[in-house]
Length: 295
Ligand code: HEM
Image (cartoon, rainbow, N blue to C red):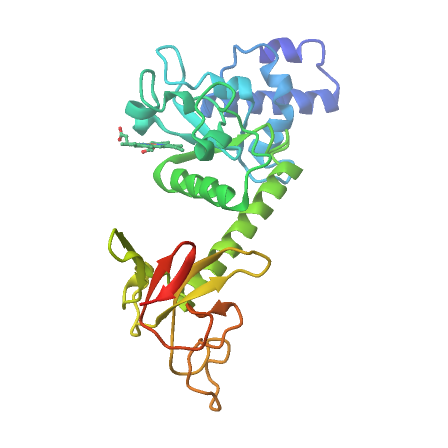
């Protein structure tokens, strides 16, 4: 193939250089496991050669086309077992039992099915790279899968498609996806901080007392050195509320170092409403209809 490419180009320095690059490309391609029998592979892969060799100033990273990735399904005549998440390709050969033919996750092999990692839709329609419309928290979940593959499997290269262009550069789609991940992570951190300040109440239901909520030092899975009292927490802009435990002594969380405080913890937070809609410290509330009432 290299000989054919070079035929008739002898003597012209620019073409000779191109020939030489193509020859290097072939050698590198073979080293990296590309199949040189794919027609037009070398010409098609000239830009990939530059990326792989670093001549174009890009990071030396292997770029794969979808057709190329598709062959890595772990089948008898396939060159290996790869999958991609958010355009990053991994060698998952050590997970042959799950991803190989007949495995419970074989549908992930040889493609980028990013969307299905969060939707759980493993149909042909669902197994796609398109992540449009996924929420920030779903994007965080997808990003967690990416981190999992980075940690547990071998990175192979980038897939030319929705997330990387033919030069291996991130596409607008990838930038948007990354922005959503960052937003999701910010929201998660905010909700973690809020959960620490206002841990969820314990709750139970029985036919006698109906629904009951109360606080303890581990309610809502948040370990702490205070018990607190149950209050309704309203989210700004939302009419719904959730039952949270509120610290009743010390400075408010918004002014943790304040010396001049009324020693009422977060009881005066404006997002809170008392169980009885009046100022009363109670350790238990029972819920009647949609309302929470003090025992
Ligand atoms: C969105 C839904 C789901 C996705 C995207 C998903 C994806 C995956 C993937 C990619 C693996 C292989 C991980 C590896 O490389 O080691 C895996 C393993 C596994 N998953 Fe899921 N999964 C989903 C839901 C579930 C559910 C609902 C169950 C159980 C009812 C489950 C049970 C398992 C088990 C038991 C394994 C280990 C399999 C083994 O070692 O052979 N998964 N999952």
